[in-house]
Structure formats: C-alpha cells, structure tokens
Image (cartoon, rainbow, N blue to C red; front, side, top):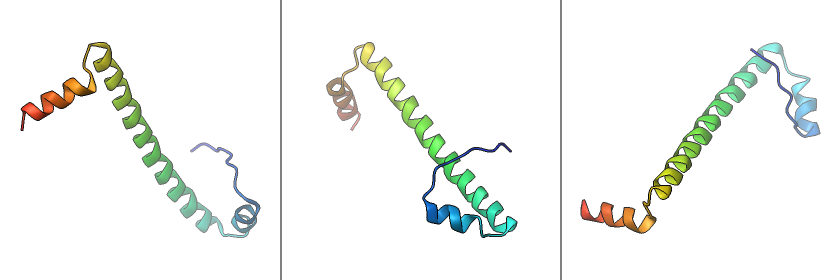
Length: 73
C-alpha cells in the first residue's frame, strides 16, 4: 500500500483522527473500492472517446452510424 494525501473538510479530519485503527482500515478499504470503480469508469469513457475519434477520422459520422444501426433493426 502507498499513502496519498486528500483534502477533506475540517470536521471529517477531526472525526477521522478520533477513530480506532480498525475503523480507519475499514474507511481506507471503502475509499480504495470507490476510487477503483471510478478509475475503471474513467478508463472506459476514455476508451470510448478514443474509439469515437478514430471512427470519426475514418469517416464514420453520427448520421452514418445511426443509419447502420437502423438498417440492422
């Protein structure tokens, strides 16, 4: 594990400093899960945007895509 610093409001910092090491571990675990989920979402969106840019550079416009998808129905 690696340590990072994040900004929180004063009340959170004050309360966090009062809790037990076990409670801190639980919060760290929850935070890790939340960040992992968000990073996956960001990665997926970046991949989708990159694919859209490549498709557009290759001439695939939203109108053409809509037409292709309509033909499949």
